[in-house]
Length: 149
Image 1 (cartoon, rainbow, N blue to C red):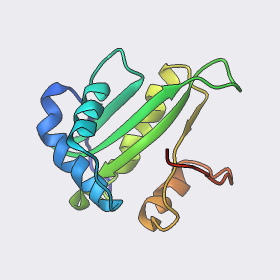
Image 2 (image 1 turned 90 degrees about the vertical axis):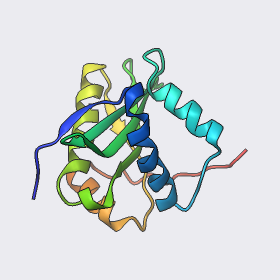
Image 3 (image 1 turned 90 degrees about the horizontal axis):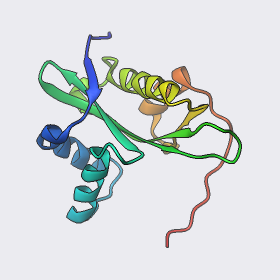
Image 4 (image 1 turned 180 degrees about the horizontal axis):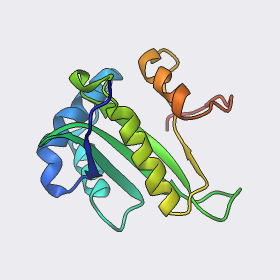
């Protein structure tokens, strides 16, 4: 079942609605960040001069999901790439099309910016999200390596 949602960029006035979803997203991944990280993240997401952006999915006046994405340069293309960093919908909103609507919003913004690629990561065990992702994107087969500094 898919519902009609309002999709729009988040603004400074949306912080009180965003913050509980942000906390739930972090909890889903079993992590937390310091309050100063949340403050800096929010400032970056709502600063038009930053390459970071946030779009919300609203059911009426209620924020039910968000997506954060970042534009960056690539050595492989002239235009930017778009990294979809965070995607989260409230549990009650899952299965109603909110996640797909948020991904499609990023695709639209990326196309407007001249990006040649939108990409993201998810955990292998995140079966619910992967079921959606397998419908809206392709898996290129790359493995991520990292070292925390």
